[in-house]
Length: 64
Image (cartoon, rainbow, N blue to C red; front, top):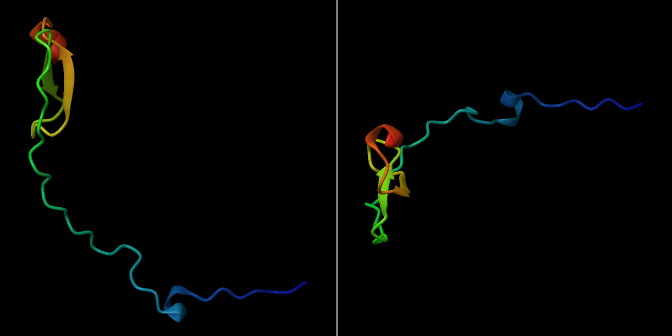
């Protein structure tokens, strides 16, 4: 039976495993395609970055 030694993080010279992550710049505005008259866009977020297509005849309560 052989024994394998695993070097520690300091021995290998690794850096911090949790480096600072740079925030990416905000994405460019999304170009939405025209929809048929019975459909409209609704957004899942306040920044208007997550559009979904819903029926135009929904009541406001159904959209929320």
